[in-house]
Image 1 (tube, helix red, strand yellow):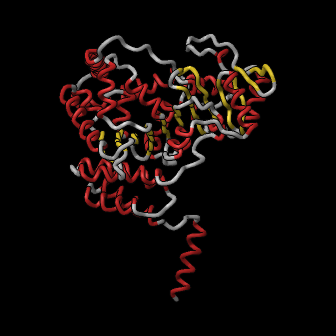
Image 2 (cartoon, helix red, strand yellow):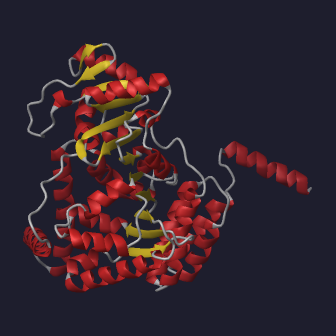
Length: 457
């Protein structure tokens, strides 16, 4: 009888097309219910902690559970629990090398390239964060239409002003323009405080990274919808000359789109295996004559200076990847379930971190006292919220704790002096790695906070 009942239930599940709920799905569902419906933090923490102990391939559930735990621990004042959670994120990826989360062509960049940024649009699109935000949030993040982005901002601001006006018995337009004035005054005050803190002459603005400067022109040339169509976008550069860079765009149907773009005049092909964008009339500062496009692997469009592309092609022919070993190692330690990540080698971090110091003596003192960083890794994950996980590997275990203490002291001091900064770092946590050889930090941006950043209060 029991076997007949089990068979009937199995058949019913097969007919309905719904798979049975996994243990990870059950724990996540109950945790969300406790957190959002009955608002019981202890219940939610219990289920999310159990979720993170599960062995499962459902990484999106683990990521969302981890982000929710960070919020719950902070809300409950459990600061001592935050550090182990940060360590759990990096330990999951740092114990073994990851592969396949950067384009194959990336391994052929010149050895002098020491900074890498990687974006994964499909993973961000699948996150609960963008699912909740709907088309306005997705369009704001991915659109190449500045008019559409501006219209969304106005619509969001107007809706908020209308809700506030109804509650206060005021006209919507009155609240709307009052909020605009407040936002403008707040931004100006923040800029004044920032300029007052800076000493000496300001460094010139760096050029826009090639991967961002080219994304929308290539969307137009290849007749894509917008930036959500890219499977992956990667930028790699030399910190000593930021204009010396390559950008790699992955697209499933790249080759036929290149052919169609040339036929339509949206791209030209000066010689076999090379494509260029036509001259541009807009003032976006993009010099289309400074780079060319090439395909070094199926579905991967590489943009860069002609000499760099030629060197990459030669390296691929010789099957000797020249990529900097330190950069490659740092990339391999980043967990794979990220919507974006950035990596800097120790030389890049040292020069960019201390290079602007006018007092060379102070620079030497700081480099002596502080742990010598062995690079920088920043991973961005998305669940119901967005989080930045930063790892600063160091050369010695003894100085890590001192750096954690120093960082927390400086953050507290800055927050006390600047209300705007205090609000920005409210969800920032700093801790030591498990081996005490790295400084870890997390910064959580909730959906509400993200909307405030994009569209104002």
